[in-house]
Length: 141
Image 1 (tube, rainbow, N blue to C red):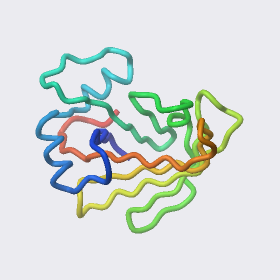
Image 2 (cartoon, rainbow, N blue to C red):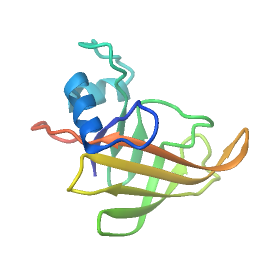
Image 3 (cartoon, rainbow, N blue to C red):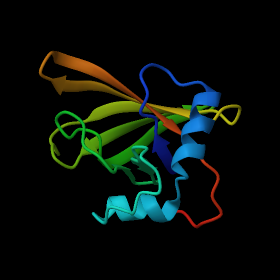
């Protein structure tokens, strides 16, 4: 459970890539809440700042991907060794059940969200998105 900063670069980020993005953006829980509730925060940098918010019952993003399959109610179905499985019921498509995983190891600041079976213009796809963990002393959402 937590709040993660979206990694905007191409490809799989390294731990150093994530540390660099976090240093440039200076993310916070307060900024994530602003984005979540439609209050675009004042940008201190030119870096794109989007978030993933994971709670015991929901996965929220502060952006929309193709088809709006990336936020909704979640049921945790398993997990071990920093690899957590879930089923997502997207808010915009409540008839669907999207299996997914979050991989978040304490040895790196890189977190990977994978959603499987996403309908897209090019067919059914697996969507993998990368996020960066950041330190905060603020309470979680």
